[in-house]
Amino acid sequence: MTDEPIIYLNGDYLPLSRARVSPIDQGFLLGDGVFDVVSAWKGRIFKLDAHLDRFFDSIQAARLNHDMDREAWRDAIIETTRRNGLADASIRFIVTRGEPNSVVADPRDFTPTCIVWVAPYVFLADEEKRQTGIRLMISATRGFPADTLDPRYKCLDRLHSQLIRLEALEAGYDDALWLDHSGHVSESAASNLFIVKKGVLYTPSAGILRGITRETMLELATELDIPWRECALSAFDVYAADEVFTCSTAGGVLPVREVAGRTIRGATPGPITRAIDSAYWEMRESDRYATAL
Ligand SMILES: Cc1ncc(COP(=O)(O)O)c(C=O)c1O
Image (tube, rainbow, N blue to C red; front, side, top):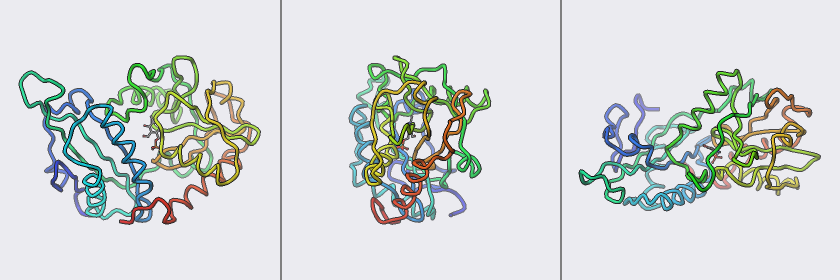
């Protein structure tokens, strides 16, 4: 890695200390922007196309008009990662509405800010917890219903995620699950949820960010002949599960050993969690879905 991280900012590659965003950038003032996080492992970026698809869906829905097309983003992501010399990296790309072009800030009249930030790859949990499982609470904070801020926007406005993380950490848990407004389980602050019951894999179908790792879990389950279903799940389903795990770009599969004081009955990690976890890392180390650095 170079001495200082290199940031891509609006067409330039700059050392972090020289990369400056305006204090009146709407991303900073209002959380008005979208982002995505892809990761590299052993010199391969995983599922870059799927991440770009999701990023461009958020850009389109948030009407963030900007000049960079898909190929320009792809080039900036690869080039920033190369310049940072990291084979295992967490790569965040961001577009904000940027600075207003006029005094009266009409949201259609802005110059967007485009950023790529590459950091060493981090796992959401330490090695011990990845082996023995994490503890989840059920948060008192509900997720956004789709008719307010649809959870499919991967947007900068993450105060609600911070609130549930704070709530969980203050209560001595590792993370927390959100319920949606009908009381169904949705996801955690930065991961999707899976449970296993009698050999079948289940995951919430709505009220969630469409995680790329979640999609990969379902793909792997099909390949491993593990039956799966996307459906509404209640807290009871999670308490009574044989296996529970969360998943995200930051670390893949994370086994869960306890939810809101209920110890998960099966082994942690259980056999299906283990099978999917090892297939996931095998896929990541293969050339399938890989963009070489
Ligand atoms: C709310 C939320 N759910 C799920 C995920 C997992 O998504 P992915 O697998 O694409 O990293 C994230 C990732 O940041 C997230 O913020």
